[in-house]
Image 1: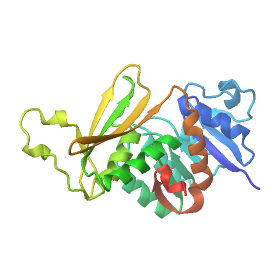
Image 2 (image 1 turned 90 degrees about the vertical axis):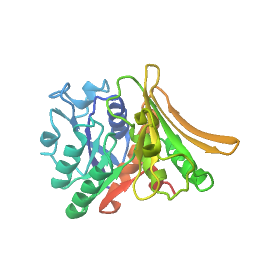
Image 3 (image 1 turned 180 degrees about the horizontal axis):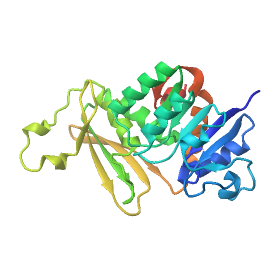
Image 4 (image 1 turned 120 degrees about the vertical axis):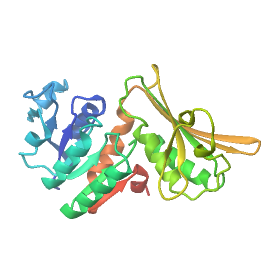
Length: 270
């Protein structure tokens, strides 16, 4: 079996480093490229404290794409990910997006570019199994309890808001046509911004509230309210990137199955 050749952009980052280590151990995957400005010119394995890997870290994604590869995985920054995705598609690669910060208009553009290139793109707000279950359970609950809002928790240093987890969840909930009882934000007086941001297209938008405080890593909860009762479905991440590795590897192995964009790890779990 021919190994899938993978480029990891953000290879020295929190998730990128754990992902690269897993790729080096996998029989059906090969680390074909690595991108990190701070480790440029070094052997990727040495940069990660794993010993020689035989792959030199590039300073830019464009430089890394000069060598043959099949899939690019992006775990970089919100201000770089879209450019990286479009460049990878232009160069004939499939792409797995692990970086948050993209919205629905960005994904529409990426989907069109992927279809034109005949390549697959897979994106998930969160690649952990438990975060995926949060989304699945919340969508099921919304069929019976239409009033729901999302609270997004992250560290004080997280640059984007809401998190990819919260955005993906809210967009999925917002696509449902739910008959909610809350007053519309436009009908409120006072500081309307305190009601959060309305997220979702084509159905009933969901209010999302983002907290950025020390002691949080990543957390997301869907809060449902009905008369005289509430339901809270919550996911919290720990300090390790390990929960995201298995889901990302699954996406790497399956991103080439179809041209265009697919979103949400739940679409791969059958």
